Image (cartoon, rainbow, N blue to C red; front, side):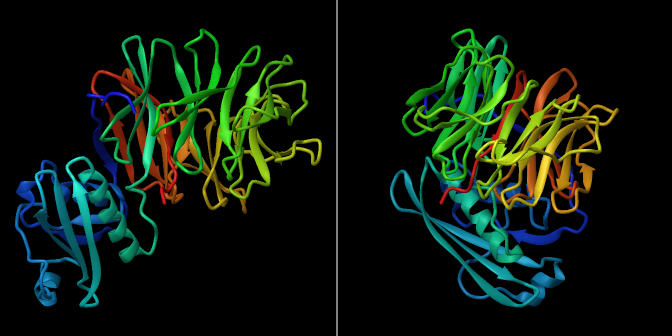
Length: 411
């Protein structure tokens, strides 16, 4: 990574779930020794999940030794209790302990003992929040995942990486020309994107740990819309090298370019299904843009099948990690909104009430969708749960934020 970005996200929770799980997250003992509050990050993560209501928001502490008084906590309205402590091991190293109790069932759910430095306290807090989600709800939390997005500040563009809450921003690329379509590799170590730094669209693959990158595709005309195969070995992309924009497949080292569609209209925005068997894409072969699906070997081996039917203008398909849902941007006459389709039934619902939505991206657990939209005169990031109940706005004062992509689980 290059220099740390100074801008920080503001987060506004604009909607919450219907029935929230009351949880008491007590201030970690001896936390004043830390430069960053682990307790506050855990509380913020749980509130942003759309599942929890913090019943304790002050500075009161509770011992992480022994057993709590379950009846007392139940009377205070908590269904779960989080306690923790901090022990300083050196000037920059700490041991963070946390324990979780199920007040409803009067039992301990154990906890974690984590070693932290001053540089990774946020990651430790996110890991604890993920552990709480898993133990209480039985699903994997996404607080330890990363986001990528583009900040437009004046005439400059920055591709940045951040924590899942938009904080802890790190610069990956700084340019005077637009950067679009970032796409995470399945292992979370690389990001493919389109950069206009050579005054034309070129696709790059950027290794985040080292900053090294390769030019994946610099063909004549447009090079756009990169999308990784599930095994990370190939990238689908859209090229206009032979005239109209069509979908191609290329090895992640830039070799073995192969054309997958051969229509006379525009085919673009490819996305692999999680099992790697199919590619979903946007095409105007039927008139207006709609979503189609073909074999990952190309439409020559099996004809493309139209997937979207209920809106007149549909773009930007993204498949959920479990392969059950599709999100896309559609204009049904009231502006461009994020829509969710159940792929088994074809049932489609609008998830947002904004009208300038772009670039949807699923969280790694498939429970949330990140997207770009317009609020006032600026573009911001927003997130919505797939049931539509929990909504958030993530914005940076004085800058446009756009082109988001939610990273995978990091094992």
